[in-house]
Amino acid sequence: MKRTQASATSATADEKYDGFTEEERGAMKERARELKAAARGGSRADKAADAVREVLAKIAEMPEADRVLAERIHAVVTSAAPDLSPRLWYGMPAYARNGKVVCHFQSAQKFKSRYATLGFSDQATLDDGAMWPTSFALTTLTPAAESRIAELVRRATN
Image (cartoon, rainbow, N blue to C red):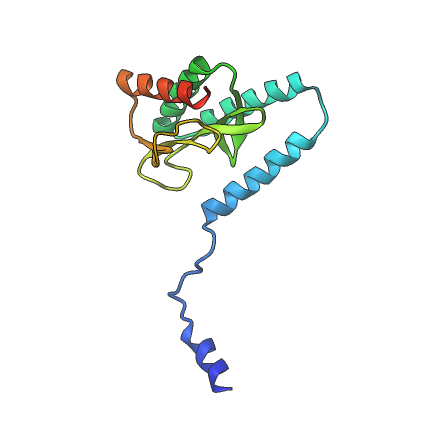
């Protein structure tokens, strides 16, 4: 009985739940909506057009700094790898091949980070020895950075 009382009284109002953050729960809910939308009927062409509209709408909702980065990333990725299909993935703009995400953009605002990121999944063929980067921090896009991103996307899809 003492053990129960001690554990019950040891928790204070200052302790935080060590589970998912509000942002993470929101991303999971967005992913569930995406899966439901994908399961609905319709032609493949209609679904692809809807996915592009959804990605562009999600980009348009972003705060200005993230929106500018996301618009440029979208342009670079779709130009460097036109065979990738834009889609949402956990509420983030992503680019997939055969239904599997190859790369995605995560706005800084999404998880209250100080920088946006461009991430690559295990579907990306960026292998370089025993260790290689799969995520890149973005604060601004220079012509050199855009060129590097285009090269990474081309490598990821070869």
